[in-house]
Image 1 (cartoon, helix red, strand yellow):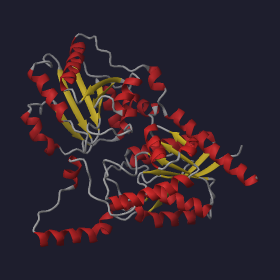
Image 2 (cartoon, one colour):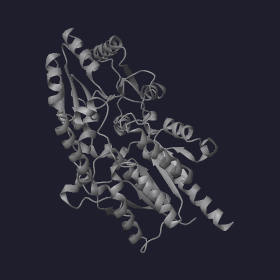
Image 3 (cartoon, rainbow, N blue to C red):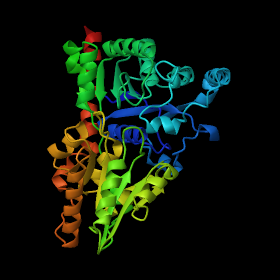
Image 4 (cartoon, helix red, strand yellow):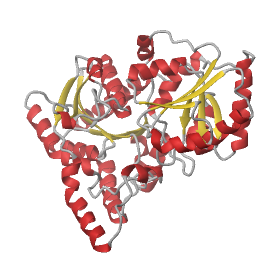
Length: 450
C-alpha cells in the first residue's frame, strides 16, 4: 500500500501554545509513522500583530521535519468588526446608554460578544487560505483533506476544497457549532449555521469528534442515523515524551499542592470551591502542613482578589499567570493533585486538553463540577481520582478534609495506575486516525475503479 498525502487544516498550530495546536501537532507528527504525510494549512504568524498571545517559538522545534506547513495570512477581526463597533457607539450616544459589557464581563456571565459572521469571523481567513492551497497543489497533490474545527470556517474551507480538488473530506469536531452555551448566537445565525453544518456533514466522507456525546448530538440534530457508521470518536491524549523531557519533579515534603491549569470563565466558577477552602482553613484543617492552590493561565487576578481577601484565603490561593508548556508539565508532576474545573449549570460534553495531561502527570485528578455530568462521570468510570460535587459543598468539604488528613498521616495515595495512563496516549489515537483515513481513501479508490 502506497503512502498517503493529506492536507490537514488547523487554524491553530505551533508556535501557538494552545490545546488545538497541540492536538494537530501530535496527530500530524504521529501519522508519518503510518505512511500518512501531512501538509498543514494554518494561520500566518510572520508579522507581530498576527502572533497569538500564547505564542511560544520553541514549539516550532516540535514539528516533524517531514511535515510541510502552509501559513495563510489572517487579518485582525477588529477591522471587520469596525462598522459594528461604530454602529454600537452611535446607538449608545443616541439612547444615552453606557458602554456595553466588556468581553471579560460577558464571559463571567457565561456568554461572549455576538459574532455577526457566519459561521464565525474567521471566515475572512478563507480566501487567502484557499489561494494558498490552490497555489501549493501545483507542486504537490493531496489524497485526502482533514479539516479541524473550531473555528468552523475551517469546515467550510474543507468543503470547498473537496469540491474543487475532488478529494475525500474528513471533518473534526473539537466543540459544537450550533446550540453552544458558550457562543450563543441570534436565531437567524443559528439557522444558517445549522444549514451549513448539515450540508457539510452530509457531504463529508467521515466525521471525527473528541467525544461521543458530540457525535450523538449532531447525528440526532441533523437526522443522520443512517450514516452513523461514518462518525468516529477520536479523543485527545497525552504524550509521555513530553513529560520525560521535563525530567523528575517530586512534590516538596510537607506541602499539599493543588494545581489548576485553565482559564476561569463562563460556567467554570470557583466560588463554591473558594468558600469550602475558606471553611477548611477556618477549621484549621490545614494546620501543620503547607497548603496551597496554584492557578495558571490567562486569569484576571484583580477580578478574584476581593473575593479571596474576603474569604481570607489570599495566602493559600495564588494566581500564577501564563507559563510555557514544558514548565506547566513540570508543575503538574510536582503537585499533590491537579484539579479540573467543570461547568456547573450545563453539561458540556468534552474533556479539556489539560485533563489528558493531568493523566500524563501520573497523579490522580480532582474534578470540581456537578456529579453526573460528562466530565465527572468520566473520572468515576475510569477511576481517575475524586469528584468534588459542586452542588454539595458539604461533601466537597468532607472529601478535601479526608485527603488532607491522609496526607498528614502519610496514608494518601495520589498516583494513578500506570495501566490507566498507558491507555490514554497519542499512540492509540494516531493508530485510530490512521485506520479512519485508510478506510476513507480505500473507499474512494474502490468507487473510482467501479
